[in-house]
Picture 1: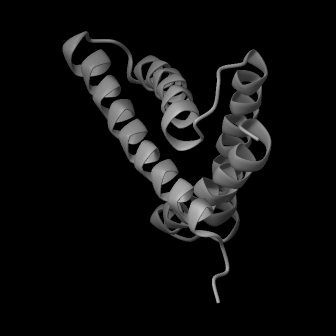
Picture 2 (picture 1 turned 90 degrees about the vertical axis):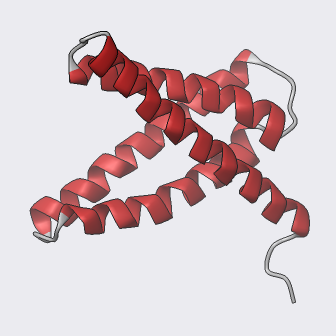
Length: 128
C-alpha cells in the first residue's frame, strides 16, 4: 500500500534536486561575492540568498511543477520562503538557546523538516 502517489513522490524528488542545485548556487555566489569581489560576508550571504530564491522559483516552476508564470506565484513562493526562513530561525534558537544542544542538531532538524513543509506549501498552494 502506497502512502503517497507515484506522481507526488517524483515531484518531491525533482523538488529535492532543485533544492540541491539552489544550495550549490548559494554557496558559489557567496564565494564569488566575498572571496573574488571582496564584499562583506553578510552582504554576500544576503544577496546570495536572494539569487538562490529567484533561481529556485524559476527551476521549481518549470522543472518541478510544470507551471506557467504568474506574479501571484512569485508572491506565494516568497511567502513560503519567508515561512521556511522563520522556521529555520525558531528551530535553531530553540535547539541552541533553550535546549542548549549543539547547533548541528538544529541543522539536522531544519534540514529534515523545512524542505518537507516548503514542498507541501509550494505543491498545494504556490503552484496549485
